[in-house]
Amino acid sequence: MATVQAARSTRWRFRSFELIVGVLLTGGMTLAVLFSSVLFPDGGESMDLMARLIPPFESPAHILGTDPLGRDVLARVIVGGKISLMVGVLSVIGAVILGTLVGLVAGYYRGVAEILLMRFADIQLALPFILIAIMFLAILGTGIDKVIFFMIVAQWVQYARLVRGSVLALRDREFILSARAIGVGNLRIIFQHILPNVLGPIVILMTLNVANNILLESSLTFLGLGVDPLIPSWGGMLADGRTYLQSAWWVSVFPGLAIMFTVLGLNLLGDWLRDYLDPTGQTSK
Image (cartoon, rainbow, N blue to C red; front, side, top):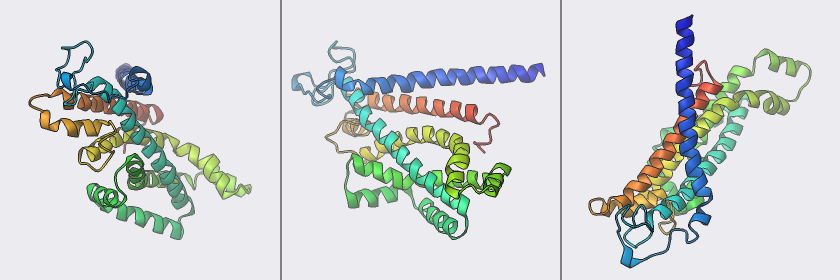
């Protein structure tokens, strides 16, 4: 018994460490991004060709160096984080709303609605993500709104399948049957009794998918399919600096580190939330 308690204590100390590191990494980047307009009123766009490609820590005015156009790398990393975080958060919120509604309808009503919705979801899952991205963005064009809309369309399926499975496990439970027996309407059962019981797994998946969508936005922008190159973003900075990797490594490395630390922080928060909301580990199965 003492051994089990010691193991649990060690596990939760590690999880607390995860929470602290996740909050520091994610919170620090979020605060910097929120105050980016105050810290850098020029939006990181001020150019000084006489100060181009200054290495990091050689100039107090440019701590992380400058890019090929003489723009401050630190300013562009922080300003670019606003775009990447906005795309990650808004796309996840849209996918959650759409996927949750589809999953609730398919899981609760079953029948034809479930068959049609889930088979459509299966077809979408069978298509390669990058192929859908190329076709979708080639037709609609690039831009922040297009990228967000594409990610919503591409990722609602995950939430729909997750919610549908949870609803199937809940729809025949005693408290749901009792609600039906006393005449409670279907919509009230769905939104007041079922939805609150499936929010835990949704929140966990949301946290992890924000990190995933930041990586996807950066990847699409790097390939020229995402955000307008004129708008600072982490993916765009990586693309701009790839030709300078040998002579000016900092142009690409620091945006890459910003992506890495932000995604790491979000993943740590997601892991902590998974254990906090589902200590039995059923969510991860």
